[in-house]
Image 1 (cartoon, rainbow, N blue to C red):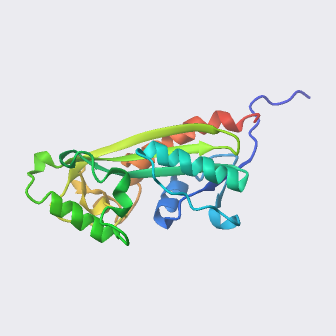
Image 2 (image 1 turned 90 degrees about the vertical axis):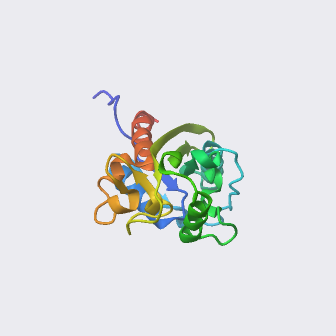
Image 3 (image 1 turned 180 degrees about the vertical axis):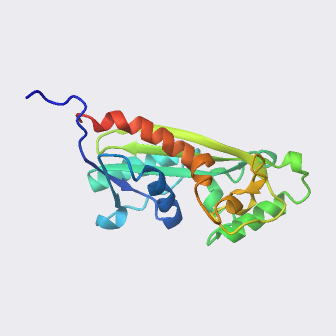
Length: 213
């Protein structure tokens, strides 16, 4: 009997994030890809700490994925994401997770952003979320995808869902913040968010790699 050209081979992929909510979002969108077994970094001993010192989200995603793939001796996916605000010249950018300084929390980061935008009118509060996702093998970078979610920064936090800057990221089409959109169901956010759209690209790009590899 001849071989199946489109046979799918199982592949273990380490998810490098330590953020449980981000991990849940990743698995909700990619967990049904045939042939992939997702594992946590906790399953591997001696995981190195990767300093996120890149100038772009892409740089950081690549560094994390390639470092962890070598350390775990298997494929690794890593994302780096954050908020870019037009009036702040792209800040907080790659510093999004620690914008308020050492020990920053979602709440302190949000308050810093709101204080810096205090005197800005709505039309000058344009912003976007950015998500870069890299996939690497122990030997090479396999691919990088990036996508965006456009919106505005609200005057105050609204909604109890999501995480990070979701309570102040206003999506005009839905007339709600991402936190409001996801406080009862993640179905809408998992279609329109920067990470959701990047993960859809990820699914399209990884499919050919799972065949005959």
